[in-house]
Length: 353
Ligand code: ATP
Ligand code: MG
Ligand code: FE
Image 1 (cartoon, rainbow, N blue to C red):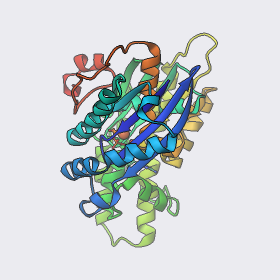
Image 2 (spheres, helix red, strand yellow):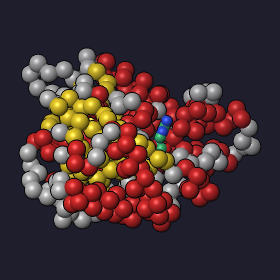
Image 3 (tube, rainbow, N blue to C red):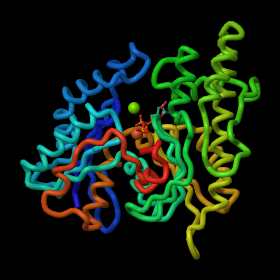
Image 4 (cartoon, rainbow, N blue to C red):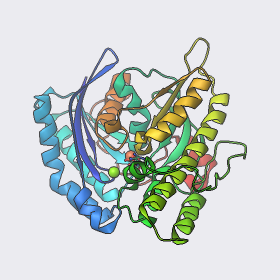
């Protein structure tokens, strides 16, 4: 199966071509354009600017991917595009592009949940069979999920306020480090003392798997205002913030691993995915937790932690291979600004729908 995948839900315009053969994925093309310059002056992603930028370069991005793969549309078995959740303008651009190609080439269209892309992204490495425990940490989400199989996701806990990536971005903004904040905070944290400030570890001793990060950001901004921001102080603030994030995630991971039963004879696989999974300190902290349970931490390569189209193509390929998609596929599907991965959880928790 050869699938073209398109991603445009935030500030990455991306296209990838993926081949799935005997359950093994091979990337034939993987193009990612990040809209850095477009949003830099605003220190955050501006939805209208993102939508226009996607519209301007979507066609070129897809063409570049097809060229890299050495294929024409006739050589595809389907076209997959992110259909939510995300910024609606960008999602519409990617979906319309994908639908037009699918219809013109007479191939099925597959509407993909962006979060399912992140959830399955570790499988791009062909070393992560189901089931696994997943920590999805991105710009808009922070949740533990049990991934039992394709389409079988059970949400175990979530942030009750900010996502982790959002906490990194807001902290960076307070410290004047630009956008996106994650990589900048991580870089400075390397030079700082993680014990210089003792920031709160919210909900740490609360039962369950819910998390909270809004208070942490407030604590950083209060500490930042107390004295002039020298280089050392800045590095110490970053290191101490990052240490608090790692502690909270590791503490919750321990609890999640305690409750995770992969089944008789199955290895314990703990996956971290999403933009924050590219943070080395976070990886190291989670690795230790997995090891303590005799398990293995699986994390995608950095390129596939943040938004990319390879993970979208993979979901499309796995769904098509599973046989649930016939004829023209999801050509009638609409864009969904909100789309919980675990639909059932939406009925339990109206605030999440
Ligand atoms: P979602 O997937 O929830 O819709 P998104 O697509 O915007 O949100 P991603 O692209 O998965 O999110 O991740 C982007 C986030 O990851 C940003 O908040 C960014 O700050 C964060 N991030 C990226 N690199 C790092 C890093 N090295 N350390 C910490 N955070 C990082
Ligand atoms: Mg991005
Ligand atoms: Fe994302």
